[in-house]
Image (cartoon, rainbow, N blue to C red; front, side, top):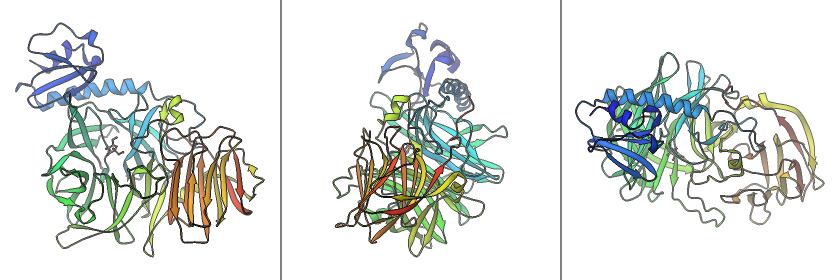
Length: 543
Ligand code: FRU
């Protein structure tokens, strides 16, 4: 039976929620079971985890091209349905100069790259609710890394190989061509068996993205279906694809493939054995050089901290690596990129003047209940950071272009009397002495407390006196210095704290009342540099 007939019986293309291709079969899930017509016997219908699915044997008349054409039709529907979720909902927690989703859930940055003189930055998006489901890619573009313009819903979960999510990946700029590599995620049957494929799409002249389908359909030996988030780099005469992976013994690893043409990929091997045990899964690898030193960034999951306040197992790491004569990777020394609450899945891009700029997801995988959900959206990106490698340290600074947002620069005297800065979007630079306790976003009920403990020499970021609903409330960072230099970026419901000229960073979502605009300092008096940070369009569609 033809695919067109199956879709017709299922109530037409507007009723198709997803398409799947389990072994030897074609399955479609529908939005509305009432619209399904009377079915012939050979079509099996069943409710799979709350979704009404119709399934039939795939005969040889159904070609990959048929499936691709159907995918394009589903994509059209999905774009239209998602377009009803582009109006940014007004919300006091919404950042005014960070990228946030108009509605729904944003997670990882994807495809961050400078291509033909423009910056491209995509995000993982679920348009319809604050939940992790059926991810889309949204495209924003910028000329200056600060002002981001909405472009399109670039990729939707429309095809048999990605219908439970166009998962994360990177872009490759190759001359005029812009390639997107991503993981197609599907879940089959009642036990939601995961099926993972690495896929490619390419930009068209019209600025849309044409899916070319899976380029890696099978798993490397000894690896589970948890293998994803391709990063593709050209080096030493061939393309390398780095993937986050999990072994059958539930160890996180880096999987590497090679290709000469970006389409045919050969598995090389798994890396990371020398760090083991190092978590049950590694996600979102990135690979780049700073001052001639190679680094790999990834998100190891399942690493416990000895600090009782730090209960979250989703980590972020950067490692120096070296490659031997065979090109094999060896992990050398590693650090956290961010010691705060909300930082995961970062990606980097290189600027035309050679800087390495990082954007992270200001959020964590399991946390989906923030006060902003009451207004229908959750999560945001971090400020962009410039990375450098100085005397054996990874240094992160707010990207230089952020200066464009500074307004009304002034000197504040901070002491326990406090000062009402009448805004929650600012930059504050000061030295916090040992024993000092800085209160930010403070009113009678709320405050964020940043204290430098004199006994333990620990910098403590405490958000327990805020409206936080989920996640840790205290983060601690041991420091060597007597005084700590802080550059703090605030934006309504976030704080990004750059410590000792970028040697460490602590990032956190902090939800407080709208009038929580005081800053005070207990235990010391210091002068601080203060600037308001002006608003910019965080990449919303013109509605
Ligand atoms: C990381 C991650 C990725 C995956 C994506 C799905 O946050 O779990 O590994 O591709 O999110 O949205």
